[in-house]
Length: 276
Length: 121
Image (cartoon, rainbow over all chains, first blue to last red; front, side, top):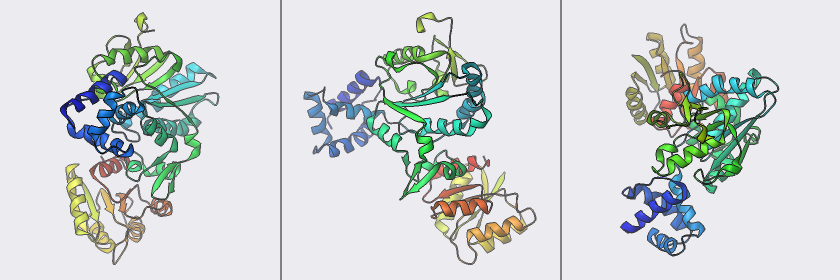
């Protein structure tokens, strides 16, 4: 790849999805784009980038953005956060919402481990919640390929051993050849949509719980306030926004209040009207 | 410091597991089959056991069943670490009293994740 190719990748990601890509991380970029070049029949990544340069509106450019946006993920990543969801967030919303559905959104769900971890938690807590409580789960990502994998519920042996206890594995998964598939009962709890978090989200609806972890920290300075404004608009007045602990440590600025005793869970700041 | 007995007939696997477990704060003892492991446990019960399934002399599942009959044998948390990856086998291990189950190949993240699930870290 030529130096200007790396720059083009960074520009595309910043302008389309707000993702900050360091154009000096040449190995990372090449390892993500190599499979696309091969899949699309290009002889090299440079050929792929040359085509994108003359046809930037082509879906090829999106494939590049999608490939660069994939991050590390695991089931029940940061266990404590899921414990907070189980013991604080669910019971409180169950009381407030009554028969109205509690809407839970995993924004940037990747291949699905986060939203399925929430679905398993909901399944395990069902008996402890009021029988009237209804919970709707939504997963979204910018990558169609990630969403396809998420919907299939199929994971490698490696993936199901990260963060997932063996009790949950035998309870919720079936072995399919060399892979493991989540039981249809849990898969059917989740609805999916492709969403670009920095685009207009006004049609996405409102959510009582938004998990948006390991996203803010990887965005450009320009895109962060757009994302935060979108999240504030999408969060219901009594809702909870959950970010990663390092993102919480960096601060979310105005618009959100950190819950006492919860390092990574925020509510909307009612005093901050322009966020609403 | 917590102790972990690593039971595997492969010297290479024992060495790799020892390095990973020492990094997360365990003191390690090694055994190359179930019979040797049982002798270790009778002398000093460890806090944790990382246990292979297929071994000569006495295999892992037989060792586990015998261990659970020993005085104090309910104390160690047992984490299987084996190439056996059928659901039936996993259920068999859980019924015999294993706390966690690792399917080979493994890496440091998987061992750390599974030991955390077993309440060991």
